[in-house]
Image (cartoon, rainbow, N blue to C red; front, side, top):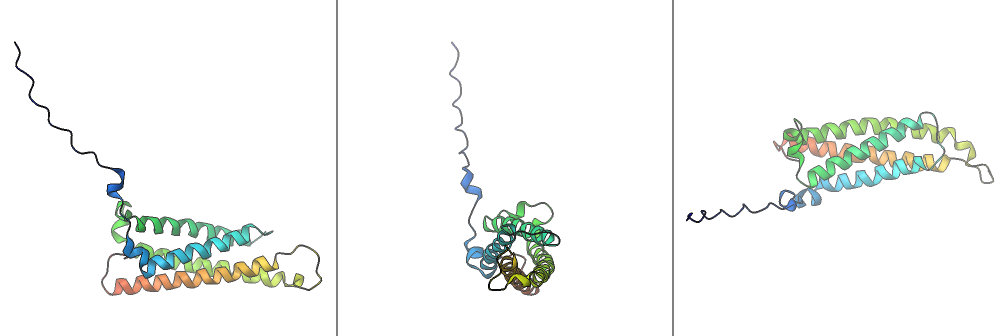
Length: 174
């Protein structure tokens, strides 16, 4: 007769998918979290305003800048909010510097996009007359120029905030 098999070890407890994801409430409530949310709102207003109007020429560049930085900001926001930025190869260990570089580049390109929208607004100012009947993108371009200026200011503020944190010796965003 064979001896009974040795008792089996219980399997290790299964890790749930939620155990690795923790919401970073300090980031969400902090200045950079609020600035990122405002950047996402203003950026969406900028590109939706342009996309719903008749546009051509250099306005394509402004639309490209706004959509590109809206998507990049969305990625930075959620990676930081979920605490997953250390998983980003090479850049995860320098997350504050990456955020500042992103903000400075976004500010520079939003400055160019805003200048384009101001120029297009001035070029279409002829149709801002009271009884003008033809379709005109003047108001859309004006709204986009205002949103672009707002985006420029928000990105400059977040770059300044990140630089101040870096100067204080901080390594983390929040």
